[in-house]
Amino acid sequence: MNTALSVHRGRTVNWPLIGLIAAHLAVILPAVLLIPIFAARLPADAVKVESYSIVTDIVFVGIFLLRIALRSDDRAGYALETVLPLTLGYAGTGFFVIAGTVLINLDARNYQMIFESPAGLAFTVFGLFLSFGVGRYLGSAASIRRLRREAASSQRIAWLTEVNADRSWRLAFGMVVGIPYAILIALFVVLPPGFPAAAALLAATWAGLVVAGQRASVFITDAGIRVSGRLLLGAPSWSLALAQVASAQVITAQPRTAQLSWNPGLCIIRSGPALEVTSTTGRSYVVSLPEAQEAVSVLDRLMEHRKQLHDVPRTTR
Amino acid sequence: MLFEIDTRSSVPIYNQIAACVRRAIVAGAIQPGAKLPPSRDLARELDVNMHTVQRAYGRLRDEGLLELRQGRGAIVVPGDVVPSARLNGLLRDLLAEAAEQGITTGELTKLMESMR
Image (tube, rainbow over all chains, first blue to last red; front, top):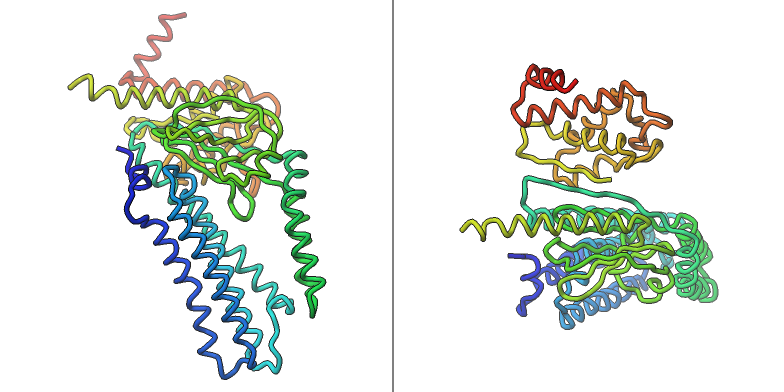
């Protein structure tokens, strides 16, 4: 029986997502509580921090609640390796932004936003990397444990490879992500009092992401297939237990289609051959892979192996 | 590259991992200069201890098949693999396979002599 799948197919309360909302609030609330605690040492208009954090949190929790309402049978939307980095990354960054704002405003005469202070910016960037790093680590560990639990065999098979982004991905990513970045940068420059440091940081981040490029790790094992992006957000990432794989085939893919779709099941970072895996729910997952043909052979062999393992007890009974 | 181990086998897991790499090198499935998966990733996927993978890589380094560089990971020795190292690797695989099937070294030697 596929435990994880049956949990996601249940029509009752979605406890994993409720848990993630609770985790989000647990991370962010201590920072929000700093505001009333240090109220006497903060400038009069420091209440802005509180309203900012409450509004962004309502939006975030609202998105999650919407995900629960619009739940589907597909696991990708709830994959821990995708949701945990985003949840902990967002909540952790929020914690550092609010706590950093409180710290730089302690005993200050005038209220200062965190983006106006180099120390505040550094604190935020540190928090961003730390939060997403912890989220990625926990998400990856959780998905591996789940897949292993489902496999539970003494014979272990693993096929591992890494894929680097090519020029076509850099071009597509640079354009698609560049547009919202350009709007944000323009806002930071135009809006009074002007935040040139924050604008420069955003521009540097965009250039850094384009130059560094995406890298993806592909792990095919007797437990299932796992694809993990290596950029800061850890996205796109997806995983499927072997029991959920219906078929695998080689296709030709272009990065621009994936960039425009924002689909976490598409990890297309090169033009050319890609591995397409169709799940038992009919959804397809794609990863760019120069050795796609070899990957298909490995998956076919593993599925055959799994079938034999499951057939043996039935025929001997 | 493909790694296959059996946790119930009498052959130690690090030997099984090392054998996978040897076979891949001899068969040309991995080219000289190719980078092997980081030991942490491989250990995680095979659900074994990271030190087990490091021990396997260390053994292959001692045999002259791999270079272990700080920060760069395990790399297959560039150029032609030293013939003796390749032969050593194949013999180790053969001995491990024989041990798994309960064949002693003496019996294996006799078997080899009978084939000459």
